[in-house]
Image (cartoon, rainbow, N blue to C red; front, side, top):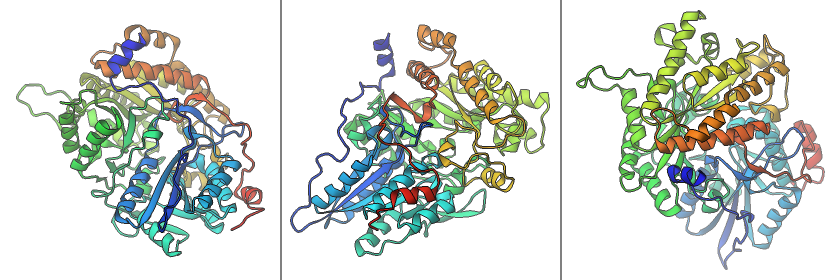
Length: 580
């Protein structure tokens, strides 16, 4: 059966068994040449036992790492007088960075006569405690440390603490900041903080922010060794645009990247995809744009990918889009022009899309209104505070139409759904799972409602003293950190686990395996992909792990444990012998 699934899936290869350190075999400085060694490290997070999460194989590569590698490659090309080395280290799959590892990284740089830069990349709120601990350990060895990501861009107190201990913080996107940082570093003038200074001023949910134009920005640089650390080594990522036009109050994307969508040059994107396929064996892509339907250049990008598939038929991809990308009614006659959303769905399928992630979040219109997810409702119901049975039914039928339209094009639907929104109550988890299954959802990711720093909901929770947990390690969408008006923290978690159990039932697993996920309309590639993911999601959730941030074959280094909770405790623990 699995041979048959692999045949249908097309873009799949056996996972690599290579477990070498990412920096193994790096050459030392050449005579009369300056060598700069840059480590881009994606921190993991601590589990509930204080151990660092790590896996033999990951499932989703980190786009920030390869995007930064692309920026480094572009800088190296424009500075031939400098030997610039790039090391990508994702703690989730490349090994936990212990104190001894920190020592060896610093000592190798000294031995090889290399300048050393430690860049802690893409730090999310739940990764901040681990990132902070690593930053302080490297600072205790007098290393140059930079740190960026959504949490760093959104939480001023975290930035202030790190800057006070010699860590350089990077606010927002790094496309323009990175070359300026390297220039300053070589002059010995590295600043304590960098942010976008030239670009487009975009609206956010909290004001405005300056963001870079990315039409000519360097594209990600695929690292074959890094790709091999994932269960499917033919899978990689790309961002074709940034920003989000919507105002969802729980989301920080619009506040860090702005509400104005900015796109890469379509021809450059298509060329990158061709190169990834031909030179790196990439057959599956995750397009990480927050909403590909709102990408200004989606049509030429999809047309270009559809053309590539003529000679590369196993090229496929997953993307994220909003509900409105597929709310169209099919034309009533052959002479009627298709709507924009129908053209998008049909072209996405022709370009190789086999799965779309959609944030449905809730069937309850009161919840949608509460978090300003107005676009999930019918236009006539928006911003009216309605919570009648009729409005609920219209939301459900709107979702059903979206699923049917994607299925009609052969594309599987992966739902994002939030448990613990303000109007949820006892039984909401099981009801949500049943409702999603009823409208034909193929795959569901459930998240515990979490007010993240940098969002309107976080500011409101702080003002209203509604946060019940101040340890950012718990802000991973699997813990309850907010005082719910109807449910206790324990009840919220019960509903969260009930949602997963009720959706990924053994009966559903048996049906998916026996029929190869025979959902009407789905392509064979989509059916195979949905079936494989069904089993992975069931495996991860029954282990108590979130499938979107987990992996295969958990590894835990019991010698590396969490030793500090607060910033002050971390400074006392890691900087007592500081050489900074």
